[in-house]
Image (cartoon, rainbow, N blue to C red; front, top):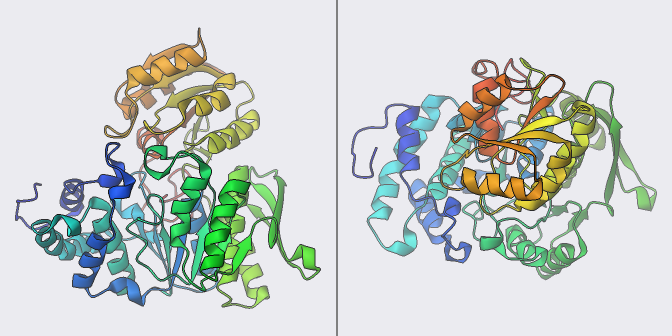
Length: 472
């Protein structure tokens, strides 16, 4: 569907085609982040009646873990009895996964209605001045606000798309903000140091609104705390105001202990077993608890009970996920150095005899750091290109692998789903097949090798038959 095509948006395929036809500045490697502008999203929302102003928002930024933090917080808030909207990106398998209400992807028809309502406004703005030209992410962000406002949610969990300061989501007046982590990522857009990247993430902080901070290195922490002082933002920080310990559980999850206020002698404590594997799950669950606590809306006992119940059943997709229909396949969206190291640590027990790796990596990622974490346990690599705009070309990726591990067998298959099927059929006895490096790759492998799609209404908090989880 082209921009000039006036045919009605009749179904989800039409809606996806329309959105895909919009300029995606955030995904364009040649587009400078500094050229992003909040004027288009403001113009779009103004014409929609400012739906975001009716929402009570927890706004989450970070280099890694922001989507998981949103989903853990969603599960806790729902256990507290709230009606919750959750906007995350990208999706793994279906557009509707980006827009969740009450723990479920919205129905196709609701998203179609939202895009149909937004489309004439977007088209009108795109015919006007360049400074108010809406992008793909402006449109999807507006759709999320519209869907959540019309659903009458009690709380909206909004994940930043890129950076923070100039991100389309940064039009909200949040009740709580959260910055999960700072790593070197999107360095072509956000800056070449953690301090520069932290400055962009700190752009979501708002005066007098509490901010929950994950475990940050000194340079990043200094930048964010300086900005917090300037805005009189109360800070709740990992390692100061709360701490977490965990150990692997026999069930495959982690025995988890969250403590708040240990240093002052006045403690709040939660003990449970996380259903989701990996040390990253511990961190993100802790940030979710701290964010819910920062709302100051519920008694301690209610938060404790809701957190214990929610975290014990909340299984997240593509987070060190063993496919339910094929336990020889592990899918993870790791695409930073730290997340690759976390995955490698879990693979020591999940794949003691080593892995064969399906790999696709975005062109702005630190390939060497990913390879250093994963190649020592890898017997063969299948390189592919999960996303045609952002992913490294297969020949470039294969060259990088061979330079890092001379003699390692490398196979190149352009189509990611075909790569997954070929890699699975050729998997050596004793090895596990692991997909990593890209959210897009995780979705492709789940489509190719996972069980049939989940039944409507299945959620990450209420695991369906689809690889033990729902939408990302």
